[in-house]
Amino acid sequence: MNSGPNDASNLQRRQELQREEEAFRLDQEEKRLNKAKRGSTFVWITNSILWLAGIVQVLLVMRFFLRLFGANIENWFAQLIYRLSEPLIAPFSTLFISPTSAEGANIFDLNIAIAIFAYALLSYFLVSLTRFIFYQRL
Image (cartoon, rainbow, N blue to C red; front, side, top):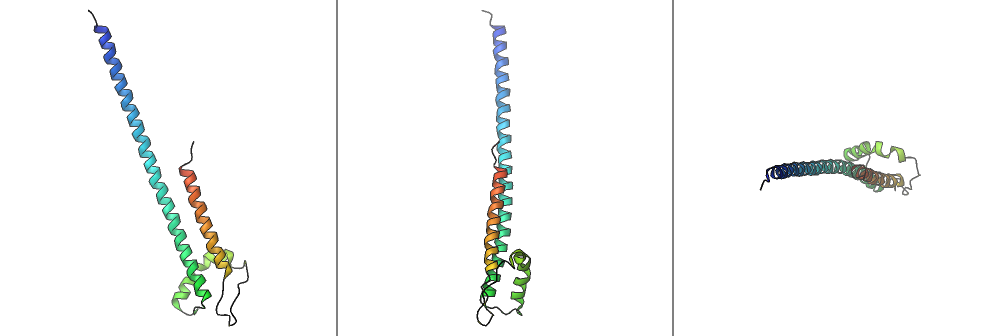
């Protein structure tokens, strides 16, 4: 029996299948690594947005309560909070007239409450947009 050419053909075919299998595994590993890289970038961007939004929310809530309870505007802490939050509240500052107490010291600043809500909504939108960009199905 002469099976020499057939054995050589089978050996060559096995080697070709092994190369294809290795190429497939390599391709799968590259896809997995790219997905992990995109995932870590997504987490970093999302965490950055949430941290920034948290800082903005804390500043605005502190400003709201300082005004609500009539904090002394000469106090350095109150001044710091007002200065840091002033650019954040500027787009909303003339939206509504805020009700005050009889003495005028306690102010329920509705504009700050709206700013808090608007920045929370904006951060939610940015996180959703980031999720859409990173996990969009092509």
